[in-house]
Image (cartoon, rainbow, N blue to C red; front, top):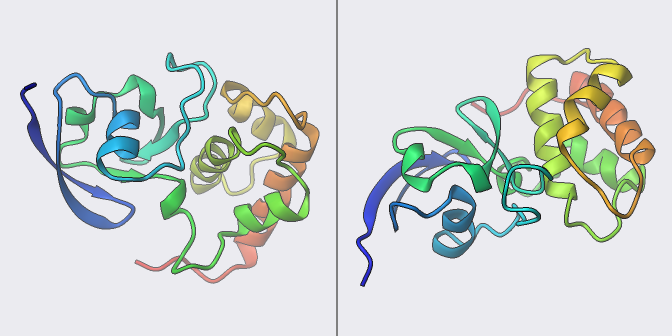
Length: 164
């Protein structure tokens, strides 16, 4: 039996303790140990963005982070973007702009967009395209996705402030 380590972290606002193998990726731990299956495995080498999460305010590919590295840190996954069952303005915009098809890349795009807009609420289309360059989509093309992020940014400006 493999050695397992105990990890304490805050995931989607909840204090979480879990066991994982020392060489297990954060993506694997989220999916296999915690049942958070929103982050997807696309490339498993940091090139597609399907597994994006926000780690202590930074956008990261969870396939490239070892799970033990999140000890004492805060992680936000796609499951933590919605607020008490209410879709985030970015999620609403993705639906309304038809910015998804198969859905494999969608969580990564939404998490990446959220990370950008938390830092730069007034990001323009060029900045959005640059920021999302690390995310790949094989179905929709990128115009609808960029339009959804622009619309989501506008909604975020008028939405009520997030809960603390």
